[in-house]
Length: 213
Image 1 (spheres, rainbow, N blue to C red):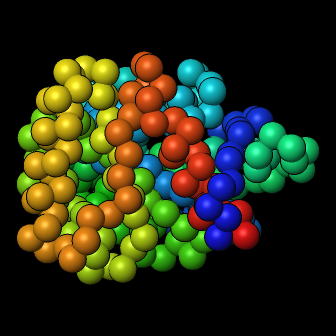
Image 2 (image 1 turned 135 degrees about the horizontal axis):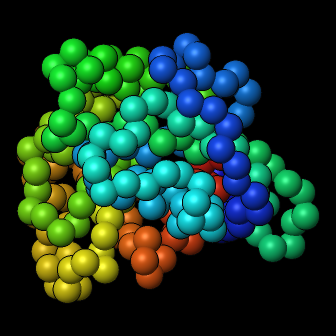
Image 3 (image 1 turned 180 degrees about the vertical axis):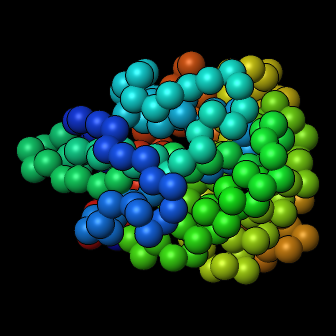
C-alpha cells in the first residue's frame, strides 16, 4: 500500500443504475461505495470529490436515491503520473426516515445488504454521518452490522460547515465514544463539507491507498 499516494480525479461520468446487485456492472475494477441516512449528503460528497456539481443528483427530499448508482471515475496517482486509471464510485440508497412503504423499505434493505455482502470488488464502504447531530442509534446499529458482515468501511462526518467547529468536534467524539462499546478501536474517519471542500483530498488520498498497489 502506498501511503503517500495522491489521487487526482480527471473525469467522472454517470454509468448506470441497477435495481439489484447482480444487475451491477461487471466487477472488473476496484469500487468504493457511499451510504448513510437519507439526506445526509451522499450525492453532494460524491460531486465534491469528482469536481462535478451535476454528477450525482441531489435533492432536499429524503429517499431520492432508490437504485444502486454507478459512476465511472478516471484518475491519476500523483501529479507526475500521466497514466489514467479507472474505478467505480457507487451511490447507494439511504437508510432511515425516507417516506416510503414498508414493502419498499424491505426491498431497499435487502438490496443494500446483498450489494454490501456480495459485491466482490467493493474495497471500502464510506458511511456518512451528519456531523450536526449527536449520535443516532440507526447509524451506530448500521456500523455494528458491518462488523458482523466483516465489511471494510470508514466514516465521513458530513456538513461540517453547518456547525461551529467545536460543535462538530463534540459530535464526532461522542459518536466515536458510542462505537467504543462494540469496537476495540475506532475506524478511519474524515470530517467533510461539500461547501468548503474540507476533507476532500484526505478522502481521495485514502481511496488511492486502497486501490493503488
